[in-house]
Structure formats: structure tokens, C-alpha cells
Length: 248
Image (cartoon, rainbow, N blue to C red; front, side, top):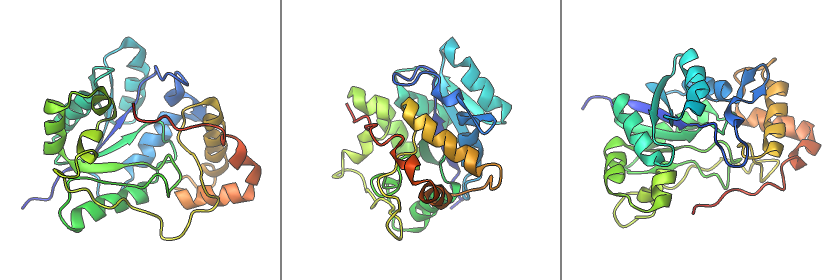
């Protein structure tokens, strides 16, 4: 059997409800989106990266940023994120899809690579993810076959399943083979960290981490972020009050 083509698809738009324009906010001399896509592109085992944004004119700068980095862009309906992912996967001729979101500028390529390897080399699965309750939130990624993405896009009717892409799979353990989410080898310190960017306080923390790490260690990993926070324990409290948005 031919080696499956593994494609990472990231979603981004300018019209975030809590922090509009967040993906193009600057840190360490570049937009957050550029940090995210560049880091994602270094993932071992990945064949391509695609950015899925909307057809709205407000997202022209998002498309321009990605294309300026050599990243393929697919544009689709703002509300139907599931349909957008299916279109992006078809454009990229994906066999396996890695789903990430562009509000994660600190995404760790080695960790995403571990997810890909676990999915491909372990027992046959339909869905596998990184455990965002055990890792810092903002390292999130999921992997699944494209044919199941196409099935979800054809059949899902629940608005939450169309907005969040993968609930069609993980809500149906009777139908799909769900793997045990990847967890860290040792407990993460400091615990209960949040590195995704949803609110101004999140941006402030992520900006500080990028500006502390990028100049001296541009290929930093998530453990380097943890060390930086241990060196600056007051930073952990910057966004502690922010609550994660729950599934509708």
C-alpha cells in the first residue's frame, strides 16, 4: 500500500468573536499566524500544510499572510467549518488529515509528529487527538482519515458538528475507532496552562513567550515554554481567569 499523504489543515479568520483580528496580531516581529504556520510546517511526517479561511473580504489579509509563506489556501463558508475542511482536504489530496487551529501559535511540531506516528504505526484507528487537559491548551491537534471527514461533511446536521469539525467522529464511539488521547510522559509544570489565544490576556502571555524564546531558540518546543514560565512564575497568572469556550 502506498504511503498515505498526511496534510495538516489549520483554520483562521479575522472575525473572532472575543478577539477580532487575533491571528494577525504581532509578536517577535511577525504575525501570530506566521509563527503558527512556520512551526506547523516543521512537523515530521507531514506532507503539506493548508490554511482554511473564509471567502469574506475581511479574510484577504489572512490568505495573503499564508500565501506569502508558501502555504496553500482554501476559502469557504465562514459558518460551515466542516465543509471548509473537507474542501481543503480535497484540494490537498489528503489521505490523513491533521486538524489544528491558528489560535495556537506555540504549536509543537515534534508533538504533532508524535500524534501522526502514533496514528499510523499503532492499531488501526479512525480518530486520535492530543489530550488538551493534560498538555497545556494550545498544543491541540487531531488526526483522522479524509474519507471520514468527507462522510461527516456529507451527513452532519448538528450546528456544533459543522462548526467544530470532529464531534461527528468522537461523539460516536459505537461507530468509530477512537484512540486514547496522547498524554505527557511526566506531569506538566507549571500545571493548568493556557497557550491558545482567545482573549487579550492570552495574547499577552503568548506574545511574551514568543519574544522571550524566538530570538535565541527559534525552534523551541513546548518544554522550553514551560521552563520560561518556571523562570517567570508571575506570567502564569496573566491569563488564568480566561475560560475555555465550550462546545455548543
